[in-house]
Length: 112
Length: 114
Image (cartoon, rainbow over all chains, first blue to last red; front, top):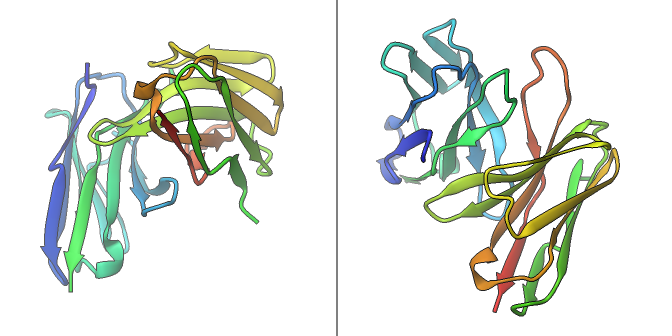
């Protein structure tokens, strides 16, 4: 059972455009929602994370939007650059379990 | 130097062979994790350990075993490898503490079972 559903599977965006990746979760006990970025040949690295007490968190060109009632959260990459081309994973965990549940990943390609 | 290292980085083995993947960290973290990554499936948790004497199964532990030899070392073993264990394997670490949720991943081991 996929507890965190991620879409789209792949995404092509022009340089300067906005990349949007969506995730939905089922477990209302989740209280931590990170996004990880993975470049080819590397392990995932934390990009940005949000707790459910806020609806938005912004760090530079990266923004998480969080909708608790809909049990959805999304990553927005503004002014997308070719260097942003990577695989992005959303994830969720609860304080009770301390285990991260990952989405299936989105392969982003930013074309110059 | 990398904080989380994995050896080997690539391995090809035959069905039925025993294989061990090793993870070492210099971050001083107490929690360590093993994940496997498959295309279209994301990362799935195999085993995790909160300290040397604490080992827990993840969502896909069948066919795998682990050993936490020291706080800095966490090994994953495949007792009798099978082709559907072909995947990318990642070790991760995390420090226990309020507000400390980030997991730090190693560079991965690409395992092929023929």
